[in-house]
Length: 433
Image (cartoon, rainbow, N blue to C red; front, side):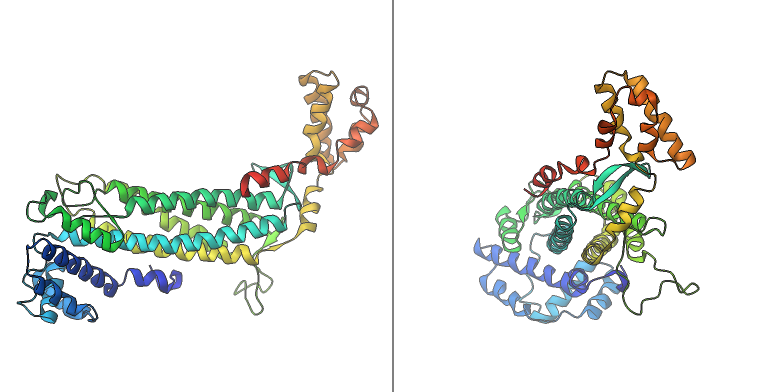
Protein backbone atom coordinates (compact mmCIF):
# COMPACT_ATOMS: atom_id res chain seq x y z
CA UNK A 1 0.00 0.00 0.00
CA UNK A 2 1.82 3.08 -1.28
CA UNK A 3 0.40 6.55 -2.05
CA UNK A 4 0.98 6.09 -5.79
CA UNK A 5 -1.68 3.36 -5.92
CA UNK A 6 -4.01 4.56 -3.16
CA UNK A 7 -7.18 6.56 -2.87
CA UNK A 8 -7.61 8.47 0.41
CA UNK A 9 -11.17 7.23 0.99
CA UNK A 10 -10.00 3.64 1.22
CA UNK A 11 -6.75 4.43 3.02
CA UNK A 12 -8.65 6.18 5.81
CA UNK A 13 -10.49 2.95 6.66
CA UNK A 14 -7.15 1.39 7.64
CA UNK A 15 -5.64 4.34 9.49
CA UNK A 16 -4.72 3.89 13.17
CA UNK A 17 -7.17 6.66 14.04
CA UNK A 18 -10.06 4.78 12.41
CA UNK A 19 -9.02 1.49 13.98
CA UNK A 20 -8.91 2.97 17.48
CA UNK A 21 -12.25 4.67 16.91
CA UNK A 22 -13.84 1.32 16.10
CA UNK A 23 -12.15 -0.27 19.11
CA UNK A 24 -13.67 2.46 21.25
CA UNK A 25 -17.14 1.97 19.79
CA UNK A 26 -16.98 -1.78 20.46
CA UNK A 27 -15.95 -1.22 24.08
CA UNK A 28 -18.53 1.53 24.62
CA UNK A 29 -21.42 -0.43 23.11
CA UNK A 30 -20.38 -3.47 25.14
CA UNK A 31 -20.52 -1.37 28.31
CA UNK A 32 -24.01 -0.19 27.39
CA UNK A 33 -25.14 -3.79 26.97
CA UNK A 34 -23.46 -4.83 30.23
CA UNK A 35 -25.23 -2.01 32.06
CA UNK A 36 -28.57 -2.96 30.52
CA UNK A 37 -28.39 -6.42 32.11
CA UNK A 38 -27.05 -5.09 35.42
CA UNK A 39 -23.48 -6.38 35.19
CA UNK A 40 -21.89 -2.93 35.48
CA UNK A 41 -23.22 0.40 36.79
CA UNK A 42 -25.03 2.52 34.22
CA UNK A 43 -22.98 5.55 35.27
CA UNK A 44 -19.75 3.79 34.31
CA UNK A 45 -21.16 2.86 30.92
CA UNK A 46 -22.22 6.45 30.30
CA UNK A 47 -18.81 7.73 31.41
CA UNK A 48 -17.08 5.73 28.68
CA UNK A 49 -18.86 7.80 26.04
CA UNK A 50 -16.99 10.88 27.25
CA UNK A 51 -14.27 9.72 24.88
CA UNK A 52 -16.65 9.74 21.89
CA UNK A 53 -15.17 12.94 20.47
CA UNK A 54 -11.68 12.38 21.78
CA UNK A 55 -8.73 12.27 19.46
CA UNK A 56 -6.92 9.09 20.41
CA UNK A 57 -3.20 9.79 20.61
CA UNK A 58 -1.61 7.22 18.35
CA UNK A 59 1.88 8.10 19.52
CA UNK A 60 0.83 7.68 23.15
CA UNK A 61 -0.73 4.29 22.46
CA UNK A 62 2.45 3.20 20.67
CA UNK A 63 4.46 4.41 23.66
CA UNK A 64 2.39 2.30 26.06
CA UNK A 65 2.54 -0.72 23.73
CA UNK A 66 6.33 -0.48 23.71
CA UNK A 67 6.13 -1.39 27.39
CA UNK A 68 3.11 -3.73 27.49
CA UNK A 69 3.89 -5.48 24.17
CA UNK A 70 0.09 -5.72 23.73
CA UNK A 71 -1.83 -3.39 21.44
CA UNK A 72 -5.30 -3.78 22.97
CA UNK A 73 -4.01 -3.30 26.53
CA UNK A 74 -2.14 -0.22 25.35
CA UNK A 75 -5.35 1.20 23.92
CA UNK A 76 -7.36 0.39 27.06
CA UNK A 77 -4.70 2.09 29.19
CA UNK A 78 -4.90 5.22 27.03
CA UNK A 79 -8.71 5.14 27.18
CA UNK A 80 -8.50 5.09 30.98
CA UNK A 81 -6.22 8.13 30.79
CA UNK A 82 -8.95 9.96 28.89
CA UNK A 83 -12.03 9.02 30.92
CA UNK A 84 -10.44 8.26 34.29
CA UNK A 85 -9.38 5.02 35.91
CA UNK A 86 -12.49 4.61 38.07
CA UNK A 87 -14.85 5.24 35.15
CA UNK A 88 -12.87 2.80 32.98
CA UNK A 89 -12.69 -0.07 35.44
CA UNK A 90 -15.54 -1.99 33.79
CA UNK A 91 -14.36 -1.48 30.23
CA UNK A 92 -13.54 -4.78 28.47
CA UNK A 93 -15.50 -6.67 31.15
CA UNK A 94 -15.49 -10.38 30.28
CA UNK A 95 -13.99 -9.71 26.85
CA UNK A 96 -10.79 -10.85 25.20
CA UNK A 97 -8.60 -9.09 22.67
CA UNK A 98 -9.90 -11.07 19.72
CA UNK A 99 -13.40 -9.77 20.43
CA UNK A 100 -12.11 -6.31 19.65
CA UNK A 101 -9.61 -7.18 16.92
CA UNK A 102 -11.74 -9.57 14.87
CA UNK A 103 -14.88 -7.50 15.08
CA UNK A 104 -12.95 -4.39 14.08
CA UNK A 105 -11.29 -6.17 11.16
CA UNK A 106 -14.66 -7.25 9.85
CA UNK A 107 -16.08 -3.74 10.23
CA UNK A 108 -13.16 -2.46 8.17
CA UNK A 109 -13.65 -5.13 5.51
CA UNK A 110 -17.35 -4.30 5.27
CA UNK A 111 -16.59 -0.62 4.84
CA UNK A 112 -13.93 -1.48 2.27
CA UNK A 113 -16.46 -3.65 0.44
CA UNK A 114 -18.86 -0.73 0.18
CA UNK A 115 -16.20 1.40 -1.48
CA UNK A 116 -15.25 -1.46 -3.79
CA UNK A 117 -18.88 -1.88 -4.82
CA UNK A 118 -19.03 1.81 -5.72
CA UNK A 119 -15.88 1.37 -7.80
CA UNK A 120 -17.32 -1.70 -9.53
CA UNK A 121 -20.49 0.22 -10.35
CA UNK A 122 -18.36 2.84 -12.07
CA UNK A 123 -16.58 0.15 -14.10
CA UNK A 124 -19.89 -1.47 -15.04
CA UNK A 125 -21.39 1.85 -16.12
CA UNK A 126 -18.38 2.57 -18.32
CA UNK A 127 -18.44 -0.88 -19.92
CA UNK A 128 -22.18 -0.67 -20.58
CA UNK A 129 -21.89 2.77 -22.19
CA UNK A 130 -19.10 1.65 -24.49
CA UNK A 131 -20.89 -1.62 -25.30
CA UNK A 132 -23.94 0.17 -26.64
CA UNK A 133 -21.79 2.77 -28.36
CA UNK A 134 -20.00 0.05 -30.32
CA UNK A 135 -22.71 -2.60 -30.46
CA UNK A 136 -22.45 -2.77 -34.26
CA UNK A 137 -18.78 -1.86 -34.66
CA UNK A 138 -17.45 -4.93 -36.46
CA UNK A 139 -14.02 -6.28 -35.56
CA UNK A 140 -12.27 -9.58 -35.99
CA UNK A 141 -12.59 -12.13 -33.23
CA UNK A 142 -9.40 -14.00 -32.42
CA UNK A 143 -8.58 -17.40 -31.00
CA UNK A 144 -4.98 -18.22 -30.08
CA UNK A 145 -4.26 -14.63 -31.14
CA UNK A 146 -5.13 -15.56 -34.74
CA UNK A 147 -7.99 -14.21 -36.83
CA UNK A 148 -11.09 -16.33 -36.30
CA UNK A 149 -14.48 -14.86 -37.31
CA UNK A 150 -16.11 -11.42 -37.16
CA UNK A 151 -17.59 -10.13 -33.92
CA UNK A 152 -18.29 -6.60 -32.67
CA UNK A 153 -16.51 -4.29 -30.29
CA UNK A 154 -19.81 -3.98 -28.45
CA UNK A 155 -19.77 -7.71 -27.72
CA UNK A 156 -16.24 -7.37 -26.38
CA UNK A 157 -17.37 -4.71 -23.92
CA UNK A 158 -20.53 -6.71 -23.15
CA UNK A 159 -18.63 -9.83 -22.15
CA UNK A 160 -16.44 -7.79 -19.83
CA UNK A 161 -19.60 -6.24 -18.38
CA UNK A 162 -21.08 -9.68 -17.76
CA UNK A 163 -17.86 -10.85 -16.10
CA UNK A 164 -17.68 -7.78 -13.87
CA UNK A 165 -21.36 -8.22 -12.99
CA UNK A 166 -20.58 -11.70 -11.71
CA UNK A 167 -17.67 -10.25 -9.77
CA UNK A 168 -19.95 -7.67 -8.19
CA UNK A 169 -22.44 -10.36 -7.15
CA UNK A 170 -19.58 -12.33 -5.60
CA UNK A 171 -18.42 -9.24 -3.72
CA UNK A 172 -21.92 -8.68 -2.34
CA UNK A 173 -21.88 -12.28 -1.09
CA UNK A 174 -18.35 -11.86 0.30
CA UNK A 175 -19.44 -8.72 2.14
CA UNK A 176 -22.28 -10.64 3.76
CA UNK A 177 -19.88 -13.47 4.57
CA UNK A 178 -17.52 -11.14 6.40
CA UNK A 179 -20.14 -9.02 8.18
CA UNK A 180 -20.03 -10.90 11.49
CA UNK A 181 -18.76 -9.97 14.91
CA UNK A 182 -17.72 -11.83 18.03
CA UNK A 183 -17.93 -10.68 21.65
CA UNK A 184 -17.76 -14.13 23.23
CA UNK A 185 -14.81 -13.94 25.59
CA UNK A 186 -11.97 -16.38 26.12
CA UNK A 187 -12.28 -19.50 23.91
CA UNK A 188 -15.68 -18.26 22.77
CA UNK A 189 -17.85 -19.83 25.49
CA UNK A 190 -19.52 -16.64 26.83
CA UNK A 191 -18.52 -17.84 30.32
CA UNK A 192 -17.73 -14.30 31.44
CA UNK A 193 -19.98 -12.27 29.17
CA UNK A 194 -23.62 -12.65 28.23
CA UNK A 195 -24.45 -13.38 24.57
CA UNK A 196 -26.79 -10.38 24.62
CA UNK A 197 -23.73 -8.15 24.73
CA UNK A 198 -22.50 -9.59 21.45
CA UNK A 199 -25.92 -9.15 19.90
CA UNK A 200 -26.06 -5.49 20.93
CA UNK A 201 -22.55 -4.65 19.76
CA UNK A 202 -23.08 -6.35 16.42
CA UNK A 203 -26.40 -4.59 15.90
CA UNK A 204 -24.83 -1.20 16.57
CA UNK A 205 -21.99 -1.91 14.14
CA UNK A 206 -24.17 -3.35 11.37
CA UNK A 207 -22.90 -6.90 11.83
CA UNK A 208 -24.49 -10.23 12.71
CA UNK A 209 -23.22 -12.34 15.61
CA UNK A 210 -20.82 -15.09 14.65
CA UNK A 211 -22.67 -18.39 15.42
CA UNK A 212 -19.59 -19.93 17.04
CA UNK A 213 -16.41 -17.94 17.28
CA UNK A 214 -14.09 -20.04 19.52
CA UNK A 215 -12.50 -16.71 20.50
CA UNK A 216 -11.74 -15.85 16.85
CA UNK A 217 -14.05 -15.41 13.90
CA UNK A 218 -13.51 -18.46 11.64
CA UNK A 219 -11.05 -17.61 8.89
CA UNK A 220 -12.87 -19.49 6.14
CA UNK A 221 -14.94 -16.31 5.90
CA UNK A 222 -11.85 -14.23 5.24
CA UNK A 223 -10.49 -16.80 2.80
CA UNK A 224 -13.67 -16.48 0.76
CA UNK A 225 -13.47 -12.68 0.93
CA UNK A 226 -9.89 -12.39 -0.29
CA UNK A 227 -10.43 -15.08 -2.92
CA UNK A 228 -13.28 -12.97 -4.27
CA UNK A 229 -11.00 -9.95 -4.46
CA UNK A 230 -8.50 -12.12 -6.33
CA UNK A 231 -11.11 -13.12 -8.91
CA UNK A 232 -12.13 -9.49 -9.42
CA UNK A 233 -8.47 -8.59 -9.89
CA UNK A 234 -8.18 -11.29 -12.55
CA UNK A 235 -11.18 -9.82 -14.35
CA UNK A 236 -9.48 -6.44 -14.31
CA UNK A 237 -6.42 -8.04 -15.87
CA UNK A 238 -8.61 -9.71 -18.48
CA UNK A 239 -9.88 -6.33 -19.67
CA UNK A 240 -6.44 -4.77 -19.43
CA UNK A 241 -4.83 -7.53 -21.48
CA UNK A 242 -7.37 -7.09 -24.29
CA UNK A 243 -6.72 -3.36 -24.40
CA UNK A 244 -2.97 -3.89 -24.37
CA UNK A 245 -3.31 -6.20 -27.37
CA UNK A 246 -5.54 -3.76 -29.23
CA UNK A 247 -3.00 -0.97 -28.69
CA UNK A 248 -0.11 -2.86 -30.28
CA UNK A 249 1.17 -0.87 -33.26
CA UNK A 250 0.44 -3.62 -35.77
CA UNK A 251 -3.13 -3.95 -34.40
CA UNK A 252 -4.11 -0.46 -33.19
CA UNK A 253 -7.83 -1.11 -32.89
CA UNK A 254 -8.03 0.94 -29.70
CA UNK A 255 -5.66 2.75 -27.36
CA UNK A 256 -5.55 4.44 -24.01
CA UNK A 257 -6.26 8.16 -24.11
CA UNK A 258 -3.00 10.04 -24.60
CA UNK A 259 -3.31 13.47 -23.01
CA UNK A 260 -1.64 16.67 -24.26
CA UNK A 261 1.85 16.92 -22.85
CA UNK A 262 2.03 13.22 -21.99
CA UNK A 263 5.33 11.49 -22.78
CA UNK A 264 5.56 7.86 -23.83
CA UNK A 265 9.30 7.24 -23.60
CA UNK A 266 12.38 8.97 -22.27
CA UNK A 267 14.29 7.84 -25.37
CA UNK A 268 11.74 7.61 -28.20
CA UNK A 269 9.46 10.63 -28.61
CA UNK A 270 7.08 8.78 -30.91
CA UNK A 271 5.95 6.25 -28.26
CA UNK A 272 2.35 5.99 -26.96
CA UNK A 273 2.45 3.05 -24.55
CA UNK A 274 -0.44 1.24 -22.78
CA UNK A 275 1.00 2.17 -19.40
CA UNK A 276 -2.28 2.23 -17.49
CA UNK A 277 -3.37 -1.24 -18.51
CA UNK A 278 0.13 -2.59 -17.96
CA UNK A 279 -0.07 -1.07 -14.50
CA UNK A 280 -3.43 -2.77 -13.96
CA UNK A 281 -1.89 -6.11 -14.87
CA UNK A 282 0.72 -5.61 -12.17
CA UNK A 283 -1.81 -4.44 -9.57
CA UNK A 284 -3.91 -7.54 -10.24
CA UNK A 285 -0.91 -9.67 -9.32
CA UNK A 286 -0.57 -7.82 -6.02
CA UNK A 287 -4.21 -8.44 -5.11
CA UNK A 288 -4.02 -12.13 -6.02
CA UNK A 289 -0.88 -12.42 -3.91
CA UNK A 290 -3.11 -12.28 -0.82
CA UNK A 291 -5.30 -15.23 -1.75
CA UNK A 292 -2.98 -18.08 -0.75
CA UNK A 293 -2.07 -16.58 2.66
CA UNK A 294 -5.77 -16.02 3.34
CA UNK A 295 -6.47 -19.67 2.56
CA UNK A 296 -3.62 -20.74 4.81
CA UNK A 297 -5.05 -18.64 7.65
CA UNK A 298 -8.06 -20.95 7.91
CA UNK A 299 -6.15 -23.60 9.87
CA UNK A 300 -5.51 -22.24 13.38
CA UNK A 301 -4.49 -24.14 16.49
CA UNK A 302 -7.38 -25.26 18.72
CA UNK A 303 -9.63 -22.36 19.72
CA UNK A 304 -7.16 -19.67 18.74
CA UNK A 305 -3.68 -18.69 17.70
CA UNK A 306 -2.37 -15.52 16.05
CA UNK A 307 -0.52 -16.94 13.06
CA UNK A 308 -3.12 -15.19 10.91
CA UNK A 309 -2.68 -11.80 12.58
CA UNK A 310 0.49 -10.57 10.89
CA UNK A 311 -0.84 -11.73 7.53
CA UNK A 312 -4.10 -9.84 7.88
CA UNK A 313 -2.43 -6.66 9.09
CA UNK A 314 -0.81 -6.59 5.65
CA UNK A 315 -3.36 -8.09 3.25
CA UNK A 316 -6.38 -6.31 4.71
CA UNK A 317 -5.31 -2.80 3.76
CA UNK A 318 -3.02 -3.75 0.88
CA UNK A 319 -5.56 -5.71 -1.15
CA UNK A 320 -8.56 -3.44 -0.60
CA UNK A 321 -6.59 -0.25 -1.24
CA UNK A 322 -4.94 -1.71 -4.33
CA UNK A 323 -8.14 -3.16 -5.77
CA UNK A 324 -10.04 0.07 -5.12
CA UNK A 325 -7.38 2.03 -6.99
CA UNK A 326 -7.29 -0.51 -9.82
CA UNK A 327 -11.06 -0.47 -10.32
CA UNK A 328 -11.17 3.31 -10.58
CA UNK A 329 -8.18 3.30 -12.92
CA UNK A 330 -9.87 0.69 -15.12
CA UNK A 331 -13.06 2.74 -15.20
CA UNK A 332 -11.09 5.76 -16.35
CA UNK A 333 -9.35 3.75 -19.06
CA UNK A 334 -12.64 2.41 -20.43
CA UNK A 335 -14.38 5.77 -20.23
CA UNK A 336 -11.65 7.46 -22.28
CA UNK A 337 -10.61 4.53 -24.49
CA UNK A 338 -10.04 5.66 -28.07
CA UNK A 339 -11.54 3.16 -30.53
CA UNK A 340 -10.59 2.91 -34.22
CA UNK A 341 -13.37 1.19 -36.23
CA UNK A 342 -11.57 1.78 -39.53
CA UNK A 343 -8.52 -0.10 -38.29
CA UNK A 344 -10.76 -2.94 -37.14
CA UNK A 345 -12.15 -3.34 -40.65
CA UNK A 346 -8.70 -3.01 -42.16
CA UNK A 347 -7.34 -5.74 -39.89
CA UNK A 348 -10.27 -8.02 -40.60
CA UNK A 349 -9.75 -7.68 -44.35
CA UNK A 350 -6.00 -8.17 -44.16
CA UNK A 351 -6.32 -11.76 -45.36
CA UNK A 352 -8.92 -11.02 -48.03
CA UNK A 353 -12.02 -12.88 -46.94
CA UNK A 354 -10.28 -15.71 -45.12
CA UNK A 355 -12.43 -15.26 -42.03
CA UNK A 356 -15.47 -16.54 -43.93
CA UNK A 357 -14.03 -20.05 -44.30
CA UNK A 358 -16.50 -21.73 -41.94
CA UNK A 359 -19.49 -20.38 -43.84
CA UNK A 360 -18.16 -21.91 -47.05
CA UNK A 361 -17.38 -25.18 -45.26
CA UNK A 362 -20.94 -25.43 -43.93
CA UNK A 363 -22.44 -24.49 -47.30
CA UNK A 364 -20.52 -27.27 -49.01
CA UNK A 365 -21.76 -29.84 -46.51
CA UNK A 366 -25.31 -28.56 -46.98
CA UNK A 367 -24.82 -28.98 -50.73
CA UNK A 368 -24.04 -32.68 -50.27
CA UNK A 369 -20.25 -32.69 -50.05
CA UNK A 370 -18.82 -34.78 -47.22
CA UNK A 371 -17.37 -32.86 -44.32
CA UNK A 372 -13.92 -34.30 -44.97
CA UNK A 373 -13.97 -33.21 -48.60
CA UNK A 374 -15.52 -29.85 -47.72
CA UNK A 375 -12.74 -29.16 -45.24
CA UNK A 376 -10.12 -30.19 -47.78
CA UNK A 377 -11.52 -27.90 -50.46
CA UNK A 378 -11.83 -24.89 -48.18
CA UNK A 379 -8.45 -25.36 -46.57
CA UNK A 380 -6.78 -25.81 -49.95
CA UNK A 381 -7.94 -22.39 -51.04
CA UNK A 382 -7.39 -20.81 -47.63
CA UNK A 383 -3.73 -21.77 -47.64
CA UNK A 384 -3.25 -19.80 -50.87
CA UNK A 385 -4.35 -16.72 -48.97
CA UNK A 386 -1.89 -17.39 -46.14
CA UNK A 387 1.02 -18.29 -48.37
CA UNK A 388 0.55 -16.21 -51.54
CA UNK A 389 -1.67 -13.31 -50.45
CA UNK A 390 -4.46 -14.50 -52.74
CA UNK A 391 -8.10 -13.42 -52.44
CA UNK A 392 -10.15 -16.17 -50.80
CA UNK A 393 -13.36 -15.57 -52.70
CA UNK A 394 -11.52 -15.36 -56.02
CA UNK A 395 -9.79 -18.66 -55.35
CA UNK A 396 -13.07 -20.36 -54.44
CA UNK A 397 -14.75 -19.11 -57.60
CA UNK A 398 -11.83 -20.51 -59.63
CA UNK A 399 -11.94 -23.93 -57.98
CA UNK A 400 -14.04 -26.32 -60.14
CA UNK A 401 -14.68 -28.70 -57.23
CA UNK A 402 -16.15 -25.85 -55.20
CA UNK A 403 -18.22 -24.39 -58.04
CA UNK A 404 -19.54 -27.85 -58.83
CA UNK A 405 -21.35 -27.71 -55.48
CA UNK A 406 -21.96 -23.96 -55.05
CA UNK A 407 -22.99 -21.34 -57.60
CA UNK A 408 -21.11 -18.03 -57.80
CA UNK A 409 -24.08 -16.31 -56.17
CA UNK A 410 -24.03 -18.78 -53.30
CA UNK A 411 -20.31 -18.26 -52.81
CA UNK A 412 -20.75 -14.48 -52.97
CA UNK A 413 -23.45 -14.61 -50.32
CA UNK A 414 -21.12 -16.30 -47.87
CA UNK A 415 -19.06 -13.10 -47.59
CA UNK A 416 -21.83 -10.98 -46.06
CA UNK A 417 -20.63 -9.46 -42.76
CA UNK A 418 -24.19 -9.05 -41.50
CA UNK A 419 -24.47 -12.82 -41.12
CA UNK A 420 -22.07 -12.69 -38.17
CA UNK A 421 -23.83 -9.87 -36.32
CA UNK A 422 -27.46 -10.93 -36.67
CA UNK A 423 -27.75 -12.13 -33.06
CA UNK A 424 -25.99 -9.21 -31.37
CA UNK A 425 -29.29 -7.82 -30.05
CA UNK A 426 -30.17 -11.21 -28.57
CA UNK A 427 -26.86 -11.37 -26.73
CA UNK A 428 -27.26 -7.80 -25.49
CA UNK A 429 -30.68 -8.61 -24.08
CA UNK A 430 -29.18 -11.56 -22.22
CA UNK A 431 -26.42 -9.40 -20.77
CA UNK A 432 -28.19 -6.12 -20.09
CA UNK A 433 -31.82 -7.22 -19.83
